[in-house]
Image (cartoon, rainbow, N blue to C red; front, top):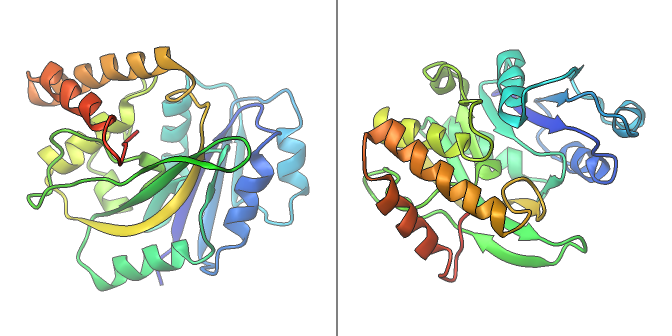
Length: 248
């Protein structure tokens, strides 16, 4: 039976951490290792975590150098066969999600699984949905997988050191995906279900300047992996945001 490790990074997340924890505790799949990496919160985040009925396997609270540095710490602690990310202001869309994820990994010869993510406002209303469009050759050419909807085998992550380039503020997840899909050419599977509801207002969706910063970093990520062509990739990526299914 696969163990699923879920990494959650928190910092002053007392307004949203309860729904994140609830959505994990409601999962029908029980072989879960939940790891929380907290950046020394000064609000009630840790108090809420400690009082919640669902107890994480590990909680680390210390200063970090940003979200990707914190995620790298979480990956280093994870012992699961499958590893996913659930940010403190996000929550799983349905109780059977991790059951579905583990089932596909057990049935198929895959290195990663990706799924749909809904962006919601403070009231939980869906503003737009991200549906990844991976072509048949499995490469990433003009889009990005919303990383809360991405589940990766631990063996694949071992091939990327570190898992995230912490010199990025927004697009280290894109760089990771380019390495996984375009360089390693790992085998992926698309689960056509909404896995995560992501609250708008995070680092990558806070305002127009966040998007611009993300596009600049996306150009850098593409060029660091492929050598050139980052500007064209970003133009295609921005164009995709104007279509019906928008990707983060």
